[in-house]
Length: 152
Image (tube, rainbow, N blue to C red; front, side, top):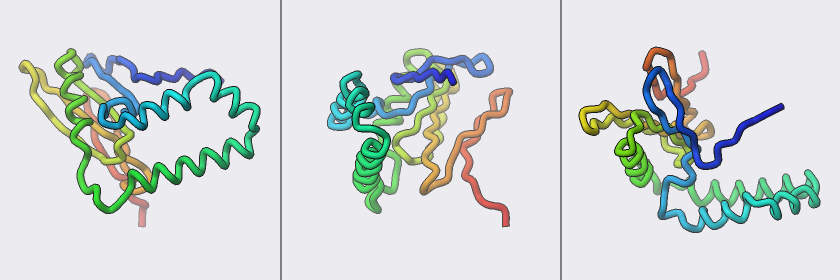
C-alpha cells in the first residue's frame, strides 16, 4: 500500500478554495518540548531502533508514551481550545489560504474570519475519544464540524 505522509501539512484546493491541512502538531510554537521530542522520534536512527526492538517492545513503548501524553494534555483544567491554533490559522489566512484544517489540540473548533474581504474558515477536528468529533465536507463548499452520536 502506498501512503503519502505530509509531515508539515499540505496545500490543497477544495472546491476552488485554497486549503491548508495538517495534523497541527507544529502549529503551537509554545510546545517546544513536543517539537524536540518530534525531531527525536521522526528520524532514521529512531526508525532503525524501532525496527531492531521489534513489534512487541515498540508497541509497549508507544503505549506508554501515548498514556503519558494523554495524562498531560487531557485534564479537567482545559475547557477551551488553546489560542495558538487560531493564531496559526490567522497567519495562514494572511498567506492566502481560505480554509485551515487542523487537529492535535483535541478541541473541536470552528471559526469564521474575514481577511482582506475573503471569508476564511478554520476548523480543528477535535478528537474521537472524548468529543467524538469530525469534520464533514460535502461539495460544493459545505464544511460541518459534527459529533458522532450513536443511534438509539
